[in-house]
Length: 161
Image 1 (spheres, helix red, strand yellow):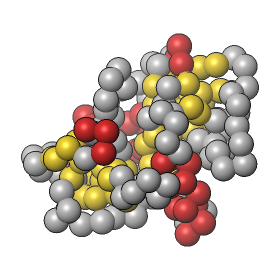
Image 2 (image 1 turned 60 degrees about the vertical axis):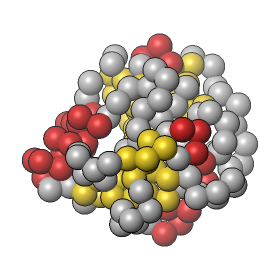
Image 3 (image 1 turned 90 degrees about the vertical axis):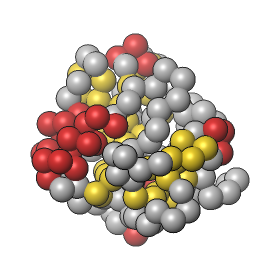
Image 4 (image 1 turned 135 degrees about the vertical axis):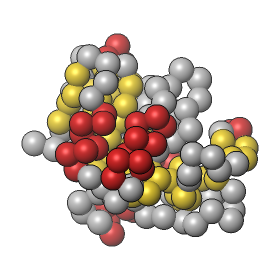
């Protein structure tokens, strides 16, 4: 996978990842490499409430995680809240325009919208498998946020061009 070279190229100070569920690819080993190689600070998402953007709390490799919304592991309330420069986004499918389908809660779309309003340089990077690419345009609405990059086992997509 081409995630580490992409992250190394951009060298964000703070990367928000996610704790994988179901069959999602885990970016956690790559994030730990970034923390070791470049002293990058890491964060994982926390659902703050229905209809709200995600919060990101600092995460270190040996931190104890707790079950949050949807039984997804997340940092505890004592972990510092961080504002990322780059967000790694899970997905079920993506199209050639950089739009994605998630699990339907709209959390990442709300989050990316809010973060981009404060930091237009924020990067959103999806990771997944090449078979998750839809040759047809996925349905979107005015709230959907496109990815800047998509990294799969079969290639790297740059949607920011």
